[in-house]
Length: 233
Image 1 (cartoon, rainbow, N blue to C red):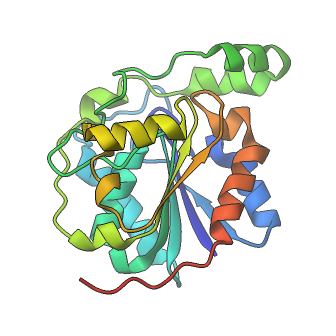
Image 2: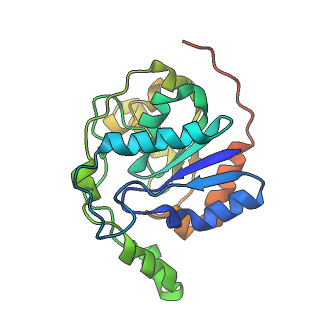
């Protein structure tokens, strides 16, 4: 199965390397994206907006011969959701890792800090034994939020029929249920979806780096779940 991996807004495709390898070993076809202007800390991001990144994700969906599974990380979950809204017939499942599908009329970074590049206690410990993590942090792009944060405009209600999974990392599935019941903005779309799965994976900000095998196992488990073709609305 084609699996499109979209990194958080301060990361590039290399952040998915370990997970990609595990997915490929299981027989899937992973494709990790580096969004425009995020390939280095010094890349010129002038004139790059939310719509450009959504278009890039949608184009990757179009390149897949069959329906794709799209996986978003953190802030990029909103971008991924917008692309799913543009291609609901071409997406088999959307998986949100440590993030949520931003609602129509909401800002993509709703619920996130403006600069999420901080080092967690867990990643600091990993950096001590794994120099590659420290190198990754040095490569992370700066100030992406300032040019990418914008209001979502979603018009196709078929997005609510695409099966969705939320992998809870820095929060819990109980948190998500409570937020959904309260109707808070970042999870507003989840309450309208016909097929939502919540999975706990306690980690930090970068589960694909901190716990790649465990995250890959979660993704593989979701890929193995048979999905019923939704009725067209």
